[in-house]
Image (cartoon, protein in one colour):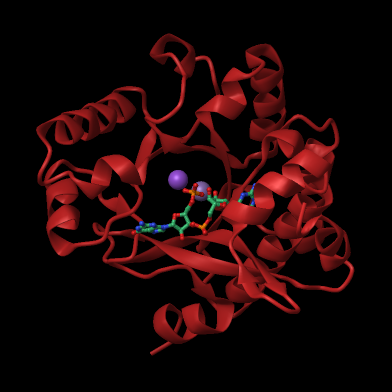
Length: 254
Ligand code: G
Ligand code: G
Ligand code: MN
Ligand code: NA
């Protein structure tokens, strides 16, 4: 309740900003994409975590216009990076449940792609298992429409939700993102290791790409690479950072 009124005004006052976290492919020895993560610059309280205001935005329905702002901002930033010569960089954008279930999502994505001229396959939309399992028929039909536009559909936090493996193959997915809670203890906990190995194998067998989230150490990265999971994201490479910082650290032309 504390932030509710302020949240209403945050969009028009331009208080939101996006941070970007690199997604690296160890095979290619470089960053291949980024995930956009929203931040709120509250006038009095400074940076407010999305863990606090996203649930509130979902309750109030504000997540729909905020989510549309995120999509537009992320894709227009991607366009700027493409124009600087990094023209195969991908952008991943998180979708909330309300946004995903809005009839207008497909039209907005199509419009944003048309306005920027971004190749659709360079845009990844992230959904969680729970989002797609809520109403599977609606989810499949929405995902098919998005897939027809050519964008990628990634499952975020994979392994923590309630999707059944039998259902998984009915969704037009491209990527599984292994939740960071499994990666955290991958070298200490046999069960987490077994689970991670299984997700990697399953993804390969289903023709899906796989990304490990929350990679914090070189040892974790080495282990994943030894299991042929070479796409990774996490503090070991970089935390989410402002666009300028990402450019400085990862997008230099020399
Ligand atoms: O970046 P950070 O780890 O603080 O993000 C916390 C949570 O907020 C994560 O679950 C992340 O998916 C979510 N989140 C971040 N940015 C967005 C966004 O633009 N839209 C939605 N729906 N969720 C976001
Ligand atoms: O739910 P989603 O995967 O979209 O959320 C991404 C969140 O994970 C962001 O808030 C980001 O700050 C956080 N994050 C990214 N890399 C790491 C990491 O290596 N360790 C931890 N603990 N959190 C991470
Ligand atoms: Mn995500
Ligand atoms: Na995640």
